[in-house]
Amino acid sequence: MDSPSASPAVGPGADEETPWLTAQEQRLWRAHLDVSRLLEYQLGRELQPYGLAMNDYEILVVLSEEPKRRMRMTDLATATLQSKSRLSHQVTRMEKAGLLVREGCPGDRRGLYAVLTDAGWETLRKVAPAHVRSVRHHFVDRFDADQVSALYEALAPVAEHLRALRGRG
Amino acid sequence: MDSPSASPAVGPGADEETPWLTAQEQRLWRAHLDVSRLLEYQLGRELQPYGLAMNDYEILVVLSEEPKRRMRMTDLATATLQSKSRLSHQVTRMEKAGLLVREGCPGDRRGLYAVLTDAGWETLRKVAPAHVRSVRHHFVDRFDADQVSALYEALAPVAEHLRALRGRG
Image 1 (cartoon, rainbow over the protein chains, first blue to last red):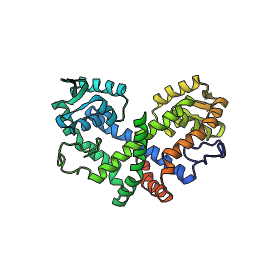
Image 2 (cartoon, each protein chain N blue to C red):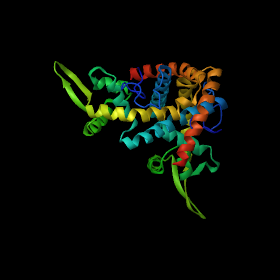
Image 3 (cartoon, chains in turn blue, red):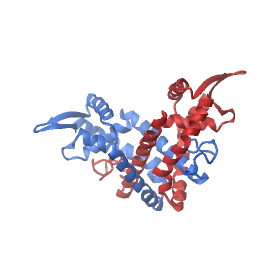
Image 4 (cartoon, helix red, strand yellow):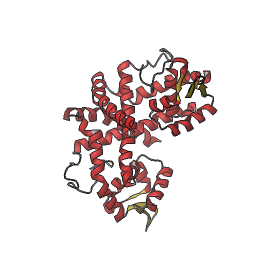
């Protein structure tokens, strides 16, 4: 058994209603976990020379795509799958780095927005090509067109299921 | 453009040698990132009632599969894809919880081992069925047999590529 992350060597039948993963399922689960963690690590590493973490990059992209390059903090937390408190810490760091600012919104008392600065936009313009290159080199370009389709068809419903669960909190 | 994590809205052609992701590639990249992060979140959440984090569980499994339920700390760091310093903090926590102990090895001066305790083994026996159920419900059982094969064939070489990079440090 080569997967350290699901069925352990405590023997089968520990739960009558839940069969252990088969050898093939174990291998898939291990491959998914490894790709997931190692890719996050590698992409983060390749962003380091630009002074950005993966989460920083993601926030810059999300804001860059919004009208007026701004988004309500609560929506930004949802979009980036972070807790509000963790996002708040991160935005504080990014604000200090000059990449964005927090702004209230007149006439909208509950609205606090994160707004991309010109420096944030320029940073994104500068970093994006290298990041896309990383994503291609370590992930996307390693699949042929059929695999891209098959992976998407398989993963999209899982993502949807998990987003719905997360939304329910 | 619905992916917040690769090509941003800074326009195509920012780098002549690296084409932006196509719409389909973006969708795959987004689906992978979401599954990756949301699954880690969800599985962690379902381990919480047992007082374990995902990394704790993984360490219990790795040790349970070793002869004498022990592993050199440096090998355990490699097996769980963690830095030695991070692993050390985690092992300290788990040692306090009684799940494992650190032991030197007579005649092996550089060897410091993490050893599963009986309590750690019992915890794993108790938690494993629920964790396998989670892995099945949120991931494995959402694919048919063909998808399990296709996903594995696609992801395994990527995992291998990334492990080799990580190994090079």
